[in-house]
Length: 208
Image 1 (tube, rainbow, N blue to C red):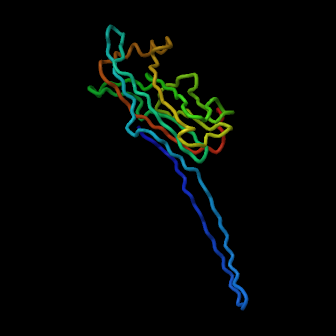
Image 2: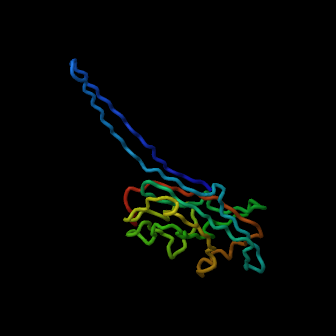
Image 3: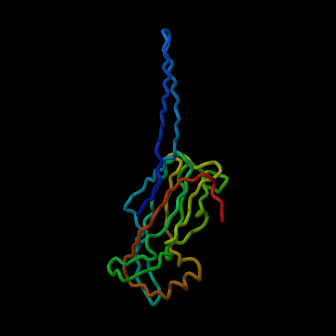
């Protein structure tokens, strides 16, 4: 698992102007502070997290999952509004025992369950969760999944706590089942890495 974090720094500029006048009664000292605070974003997550599953063929084009991918717990701590996106490092999952065996990453889908107190029910709440009530397919393209709502998603781990859950895409839709049945998957464990990118957001997200 790869993590990309944009972190701001506290910059304080102190400008001191001193005007000295030759006087027997007083010395004048003028001090002006000019400060700028940028957002600090922290992603709390196991850096070794990967997507890994086992599969074997039990009949012609009929497969059994021998190991399901583990859920990923993570949280965000932020002093400013933020967006979070997910992308696969490679377009394929690779066999552990036979690295020549590949399965397209869209074999797996994912969704994010909110465990924090920041409300994730759309743009008019704290967070717009694009996986709420749906499953998105993994992709090598970056997919924005959590983004700032009008109420703002600023807060610590108690407000921004989540679980990333995985789901096999072939299980539901007939079109997906048909797509994957011709793959002739060999018995193996398959794994892949992914990026989670946390970035600063200035305005609430809008669909293109």
